[in-house]
Length: 303
Image (cartoon, rainbow, N blue to C red):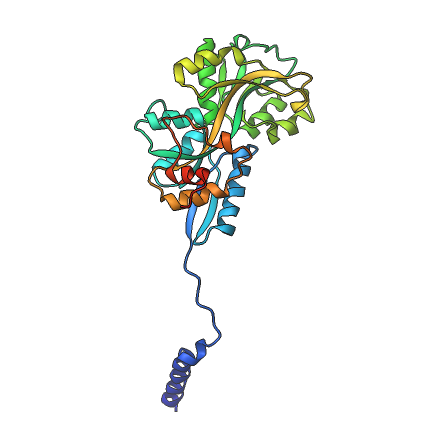
């Protein structure tokens, strides 16, 4: 009897796996390839931009899904790209230039190309009106965050301090942590390289009066020593409650990929990017250059 029941159960199982049982069923979708985007820390534009791009990839790019990961910033992003731990990276232009030339934080060249310049970052030295910091020369003896380790902010902050010849008491915090430390009185100022306004600083300005330091006088020497990615600009009046504009230095931000990425995929990714100025999007410093797929997109050609 038991043998008969076992045979019957086996027959039913086999019948359930037979051809007629698949009528009306859907074929399983093929697995999607993950495209990992190395972004930045909380409170910065990279994290917001990268998360949005990941969603766009998942929604609109057949066969792929996007995944945005938090990082300490540009240097770590490009090291992840080099090591195959990310397929797309957000980076400041000066860090990208270091990477392709194999200098500073990079012991060998990183083979990358840009899909676009997406926006300029403003180098910001944020302090309070009572901290006694009006120029970089006021920083010796002050407690200053130079950005999180491995970030583009750290790169440009250290270069600023170098050209000015000053040595503050350094700490290394991301933008959200720096804003909290300034509010708590644990630091006197912090560097940040990012778009304006930056959410973490905007929120701080709602609770405390802030001051920004004019950094523009150092632009020429920085261009001479580290390349032509640095430009003069001004942070507009009204930003963070400022009563007047503040002159500073800007750096382009790039979306970059491995130079060997398939041209068709690079074309499709470029098409997904949030680009408000096509002319600026194509303006990438020569040693970095645009990926051929991105060039095809801007030229209006197919992949």
